[in-house]
Image (cartoon, rainbow, N blue to C red):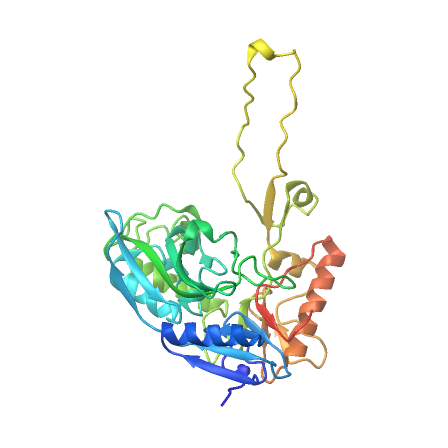
Length: 382
């Protein structure tokens, strides 16, 4: 028996696939994947369904649902840290809640992010100054090429801004076709009492540098639980926490990635466009042996510096306001921010895709920048 993907995804669109396999243990996941790979059948793995746009026509292949749950402290962490192993199908926010209650820091700013633990490294999830790459030690995965299970170090996953070698970018195959079975993190033992928050982005998001600088105890410090509550309030105000009573949360989260463009292209944008440098400016030095110097100094070559710019700003300045929708469509931009496309009730995948195409074309026409979608697309084209 298969279930419509519209019932298993946060966007609430998608037909039932031809075949569906529920895998509640690692062995069941491995067995199901080896079977489907050996058969040559089309396939994809479904976790929490929070980053998927599935088509209106049945997927002609096999969907494998990752239903593994659980996590446990393990040995091996450096002093002052706790190593934790988490199953791929484990609800991410439930794990974050446990880590906060246990006084373990490193993921508290990622409270309220929907989906499963196994999906976190695939797109290097992050929020308010924290990213999974900062705490991830390794992943257990099974490779499609070899059908073998192995432990892979975080450094070998190509983790970058909302990406990794495992991510299916729109229109491209992943650099490495594999499925994560579990992940291992090292979290700092900081306890449950208020403490100094050093990360500037987190301090700014929590209001610790402004009018609310007193924090929770009058000193500008904050506990893990206070950070979690505040982050959930911020995300909830943007419709980014799943809430059956809030149609703005019926989405795949941020639908477009913030573009990363060369610095010279960013300078051509209006000054009001928010931007963040992707790498520090490093003075380069040349060492020239005096016995071979011909009196000439060759210019130092370097790759152009890259800058991340705000997709939400580009969308708004292209004339698409919060709540915008195409005539007759049941898909609109969120009424709380323009980066999410929402299903206002009964929308089809075609309606969501049509709005996404319109947004992309407006931004490209206005600024010459093509927005890339963040969700994984199955049976849908932009």
